[in-house]
Amino acid sequence: MGENVDWASVVHEEAQRSPILRTDELSRKYEIVPAAVTQALSRQERRGIVEHVSRKTYFNRLALNASPRDLVNVLRSEAYISLESALLDSGVSTQSPYALTCVTTQRAGNFEGKTVRISYRTISPRLYWGYVKKSTRYGSYLIAEPEKAILDLIYLSLQQGVAPALDELDFDRADKRKLLDYAPKFPSTVMKELLPALAMHGVQDEAMSSRSIVQEEK
Image (tube, rainbow, N blue to C red):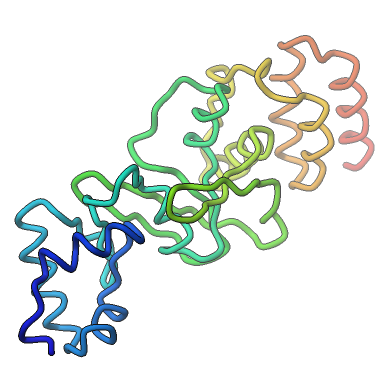
């Protein structure tokens, strides 16, 4: 059967259902060895119809209204959009990151094609929370609440030994009470970075109260 496959038609038909093309799934469906599927999709990639994202995954550019967000939980099953991308979505930041930034409990990694760029950073399973599910035309993805994205940014920046650029964030677009409720679930170093930023945005009483709690725990 595989010898007679019209791959241009296959890609077009698959675009009606999903923007994700998996070589192993297509191999089973069309009874053709995976290597032959890869070769066929590589030809379609040269035509600009699909985009190679990972070893077994291609992005179907014919899929209407598809975006890299459709790939977030395909490339990593336990992951959500956070950090700069989530902060841009919520208006907390105006900085547009080069890649769609995500956190995962699984292996970190960067995936890059002509239009698809996704970056995953690893976070502890105990910090894997604070996200919501959003729907797309083809499925769904997870994205952090703005408050969790701020804390993820602080935490992962400190993990890398880098001071988080909190002066670039608009804290008025976040729920400051929620920030103070969430922060104690992170290491105390996160709260120590957060409090001065909140104090600059008019959260004096809550910030000073939380600062006292942090100092008492030392």
